[in-house]
Structure formats: C-alpha cells, structure tokens
Amino acid sequence: MSAYTKCYDPSGARFGIPTYPWHFAPDGYATRRQLRACGLRPGGQEVAAQIMRTHRGRKAGVQVAFLYRVDRAKPVRPMTSRKWGALALAMLARRTCPNCQITYSYCIPTSLGMCILCAYPEEQRAA
Image 1 (cartoon, rainbow, N blue to C red):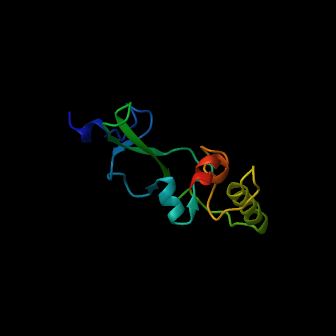
Image 2 (tube, helix red, strand yellow):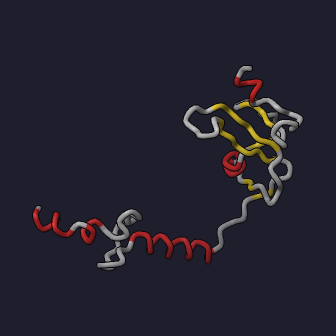
Image 3 (cartoon, helix red, strand yellow):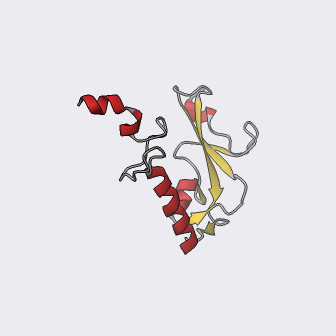
C-alpha cells in the first residue's frame, strides 16, 4: 500500500472525517494558517476534513493538518485599542527582568526566568 492510499479516505470511513494526502485537498478547504493569510478565521465551525502525510520522525508515523470550509469562515476581528494596549503591556513584562527591573530590547529567556546578568553574575565579574 502506497503512502497515497494510506492517507486517502474521502468518505471518512477509516478516520472519521474525510482525509486527503498532502497537497491533494479539494478546493474550498483551508488550514488555519491559510485562512489567516486570507484575513479569515474558522469562526466556530467544526473541522471539515484533514490532510495527512507519513512522517518517520513522529511517534504515530503521520502528520495531520485540519481543514476548514472557506465558505463558512468569518472575517478576522479587528484589533481594538485596548487589545493593542494589553499586548504592549504583556511584551513589556516579557522584556523586564524581575530581579533588577531593567527593561531590555529582547525578551528575557524563560529558561532562566531573569536576565543573563542576574542569572550569571560571577561570569560577568570575571570578564
């Protein structure tokens, strides 16, 4: 059985929803990213179909992308001034070190939880 036939199930009998091989989805369907590029969003609709391809690196052996109907998609909601303000405050919090309260031009690494100067003070003194 070829990879094409493993991933081809337009009736949805095997996988529960219509399934197509990678790059072979019919017109009128799009992924979330494709909808967003067109200025649309799924708008609460259920997943209409999926595209699938075999993938050796995954535990399940396949990679899946969900498809939504383009004709049922809604336009993206515009950003309000309050949303822009909340986003700016969130980004400011990501750039401010909780220890020294210095605001940097980059986001603080989440693995450290603080700026590099506060995380490794002994290396900064030696240099």
